[in-house]
Image 1: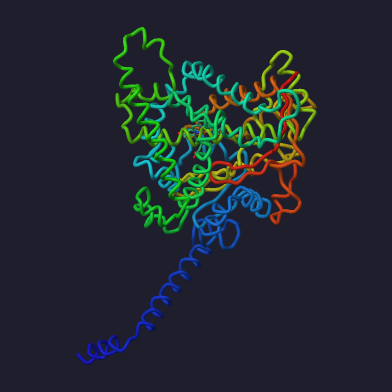
Image 2: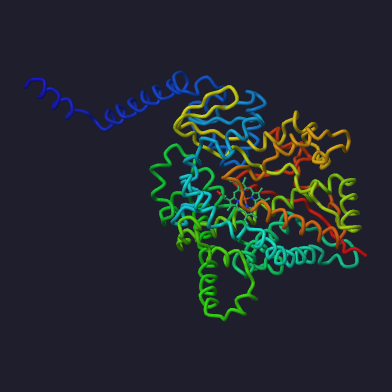
Length: 522
Ligand code: HEM
C-alpha cells in the first residue's frame, strides 16, 4: 500500500519535461541496443560497408534523394570489395558469378519490400510491384501477347512513324545550314513518351510536334524521386497506408503530388482507350482485322491460358502507368546516352553513319552502351537461404546486383570508361569469343531471369529505328562546349569524368544534354 502511494505521488510530481526526458532516454537505449546488435550479432555483421549504412538505412535514403546512389555504390565497392553492406539488412554483390544466382530462374529470392511502395497510387500492384512469385508469373502471362513476335511486328510499323518524326523535329531549322542548338536528351525523351503512348493507347502525346504536353516528363521525374526514397524509409510501414491518398500531397510535397498527377494521366489515357475498345468490339470481323493493334489491344483482350482470368481494371491502370514510365524513359535515356558517346567518339560515329547510309547494316554493336544508372534492385532471400559464391545468405536479407558497378568492372570490360562497341564483336582488336561471352553475360541493363524487363526487344527496335533515322537523314555535331558529361569542377569526384554521360539515379536515369546542332543531309 505504502509503495503504491509513493509511486502515485511520484507520478503526480513528474513534470512534462521529466516525462519527455524518460521517453528520450528509453529511445536512446533502444537505438543503442539495435545498433549494437546490427554491428555484432546480425547475420550481416561480418560484411564491410560505410559505418552508418551498417546500422541504419538513412544513408541509402539520402543517396536516393540526391540521385547519386549508383555512384555511392561504385565508391563503396571500390573501397570495400565485391560484397558491401549498404543498409542495415541489405548487401550488394558485384561479382559476375553472382548475377544468375540472384536473378536466374532458380534464385531463391522474391522482390524486396521496396516494391510495395512503387506503384502505390495506382490502387493495385503493377506487374513490377507484384512480390508474390506465382502472382507475378500470372501477370507476365497476361502481358506476354503484347510483347510477342507478332505484336512486335505491328509495333515496328508504329515506332517507325515516331522515329521519322523525331528525325524531322530534331532537324527543324537545319534544312540549309546548322540548326540552332538543341538539347538532345529532351528530344530523346519526347520520342520515348510519344512512341510508347502511341503504341500503348493508339494516340500519342505529340511531344515531338508541339509543346503542350512537354510538362509530362518533369512530373515523372518528380514522382520517381518520391517513390525511390520513400520505399526505403525506415518507418515506411507506418507511412505506406497513407500513400495513394490526398495525405500523400502533404507528406511528400510537390514530388508526391506529381506522383498522383502522373498516375491520373495514365488512368485517363487508359479510360479513353477502354471506351474505344468497347466501341470497336461492335465492329464487324473485317473491320476488326484491319484495326491497328496497339499494346492495349493485346492487354484488353488478354486471358491467362492457365487460369482463364483477364486483367482487372485496377491491374490495367497499374500496368499502364508502369509501361509509360518504364518504356518511355528507358528508351529516351538510352538514345541520349548513345548519341552522347557517338558524338564524343567521332571515329565510331563516322563508321556507324557510313554503315547506315551505305547498306543500312545492323546497329547491334551500338545498342549496348554502358547502360543504366541502375543500382542494386532489391531481392529478398526466401526460406532456405541463398548460396552466393562462398557465402550463405539467410532468409530475410535483401541482396542485389549493382548494375552500374558491374558494367564498369575492368576485368570484364577492360578500359571500362571508354566507349568501345567492338567489345561485343569476337576477333575484332583481339577480342576472343570467351571475352565477348563474358561481356554479354555481364551486361545486364534489362536484368535477366523471370523478373527481367519484358520490353527488351521492343526497346531494341525503338533504339535502332530512332538512331537509324536520325543518322540516315541528318548530320549532327556538338554545340559549343560539350554538355551532358562530367565536369572537373564537380564537388563529387565520380561526377568529374568528362567523357561519361551523367545521370541522376531516381529509379529511372535522368539526364541533361548533350546540346547538339543538326543539319539535314545534303
Ligand atoms: C532501354 C530501355 C529499357 C531498360 C534499360 C529497361 C530496364 C528494365 C529493368 C532493369 C527492369 C527490371 C526492374 C526491376 O526488377 O525492378 C525492367 C522491368 C520492366 N520493364 Fe523495362 N527497360 C527498358 C524499356 C522498357 C520498355 C520499352 C517497356 C515496355 C514497353 C518496358 C517495360 C518493363 C516492364 C513492364 C517491367 C516490369 C517487368 C516485371 O516486373 O516482370 N521496359 N526494365
